[in-house]
Image (cartoon, rainbow, N blue to C red; front, side, top):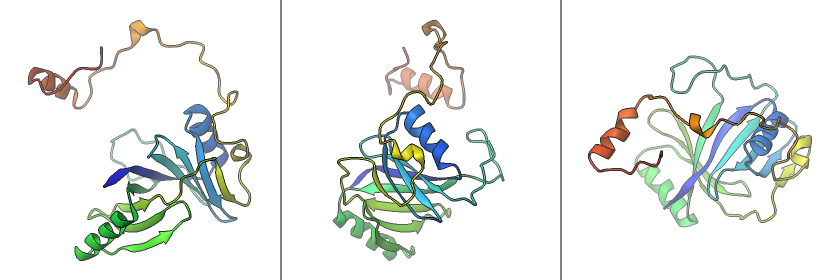
Length: 199
């Protein structure tokens, strides 16, 4: 039914640095980019079915750093969650289900690399379902009349843009401190409901 998180969409003002970080530092291949003089939308491959995407707007404001899970009223860089579906049939089935449940659905919209429907969950979270109607066999596919220099360098990570590791963490120091949910692993082992992969 579902094929994974097609993409998580975020917002950036600095697409050049974003490409350098996600492609060259995290090693997520640049898959596709589109845009014009007012906006750009770029996609990075995380797995065979999952991507991270960025909208780039000149008027975007930098996100204030907020530690993971800590409540805030500061500006955020999140835009929407897009979940892949495995067929055109499934896309229309889900459109019909949502509309039958009185959720307003926009689309399908043909974006060239996928057909999408857009809606909001009961919490106001913007969601998208995508049927990928195109397999990109030679990335990056560019539909941007003025891509940043980093995008012109290709899909694969490039060395030399970030410092090399000179002080790797010794294996003897590979430890984590207990955090929220730490007891769940102990409970799972005690109740024989899990297998410890940490060792």
